[in-house]
Image (tube, rainbow, N blue to C red; front, side, top):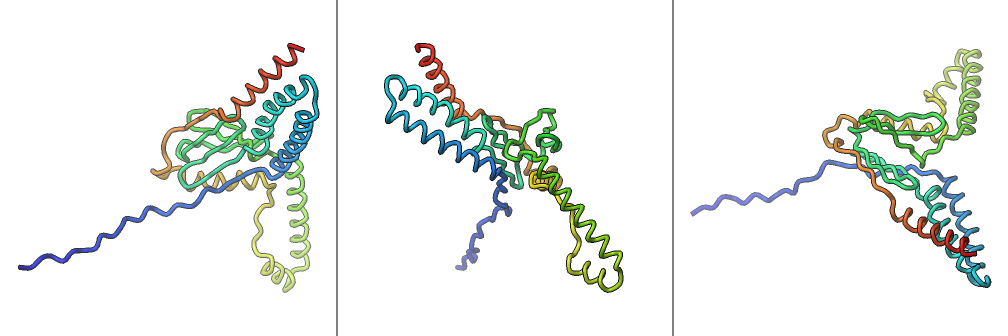
Length: 224
């Protein structure tokens, strides 16, 4: 009696996925850490050495201010992968599958527009007019050097072109980030795996302690 050969089962491998690209503001994080250090130093000093209602006022102020500082400096971030864009703003988390994103818009702030007409600001990628001016100056200097090399012509121009290679436009860091997000939208917007619905969630872990601190601080100041 013969038995059919048992074929080994081959586990299915999931489609390749790349990890989230994370975009944050280093200057915002640095400023937030500095503010938290100052607030912690002053608040702890008032808690330890303060008299009367001072420790309670300091505690309420810390409970109110620390979440707000975290919300506007350390918390903002943008996470992008092949299926969706997740925007972590000070008080909300917005998840947009690429299929729901209509466009990115950059002006005095960076924004995402979905196909339903809603608009979401990207806090983690603040616009820097100074950075744009620096990028414009670098690009102008590069064009001037290229024009000078072209004027010399001949072998010198050919050698310079080979050494430098094709140069793309010079962008400020925030504009470069938005350019990368637009490229991801162009590449993933029509993918069936990148469809779905927009999700918006309030950051109660930030809102709740800030509101509690504000109420406690208001009561302490009103009581006098």
